[in-house]
Amino acid sequence: AKYFNIGRKGLHVAEEVRKNKNRLPVVHQTWKTHELKDPVIKARQMSWLRNGFRVILRDDDEALLDIQRLTKQTNNSDILKAYSLLSPVQKADFWRYSRIYLEGGIYSDIDIGARPETSQFFSEKPLDKLDLIGIIENSEYDKLFGYKNYIGHFNWHMGVAPLYSRLPQMRQSFFYCRKGHPRLLELVEDIAQMVIVWEESGHTSLGKDRAHLKPQRLKEMVKTGEITLEMTGPGVWTDHMLTPLKQSDIGLDGGSLLLTTSEGHGILRYSSMGSWKSKDHKADTRILVNAMKVYVFPLFLICCCCCCRRNALELMNQSKEKSR
Image (cartoon, rainbow, N blue to C red; front, side, top):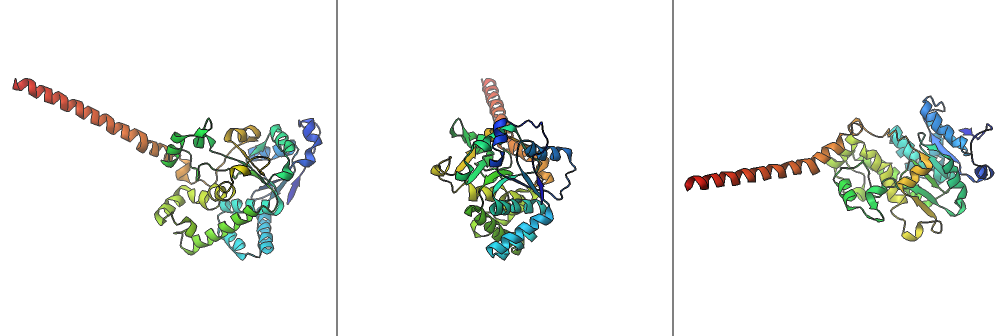
């Protein structure tokens, strides 16, 4: 692995953060190689160093070693078998859960950057008491001013919203988790089982727990890239890490700290490359087509009906006048 540490003088990090930099959790990231040629990605990764974090970057070969280590530690050969069946993007998902289970700390996508506020946020939190820190990435669709956003829920269900697997949904491109969190291992083992069933069924099933996803729906999900969200991404992540939380679990006393979408943007710099997306999704036609079906087409029909009714009334009036 390649280890990075804060180095040069003159880096603008708050004095309080400098004093507490040993309390900042380690940031774990993965990329194909240790050579980051894209200047934007390189800048985002360096932002963690500038703000006092230690970063561990694992390439593809080292990621495989982590999976082999977890397989040996749990004596579950399905973990390694499932990993070998995944696409590169899905492997990155699977690895992050495994790595944080093994080591604990922060996982961050390579295109997410830190701010001074990131250091301040983590230096002020009692990490020894926290099991999980996560960000709800679609808060505005779930609640508005503290109340359920019925319009947001309707738009999400009808597909007139970004492609979220769950509402609410927890971001898995960035999170903090303590080492050995039991739900992380449950998540890894659930994904492994799901992947094996997916392959053995010829891509027609994700297992009994997801029997509501019929073969035709799964075919559509493969086309749009949703299958990755469901099988290894935010869908299954939210099911295991957010859904089981009770209200008493949320907060410093409960051990799980959840941030809203806007609070997440306040401490991080996002790029959201979205490498899981298919061309169909990246064309961004989905929301437009669904908006046409849900709003424009019904409105058009209503206008047509109104015009027809008006014309019919006019014809009736004309026929009455003639009959007189």
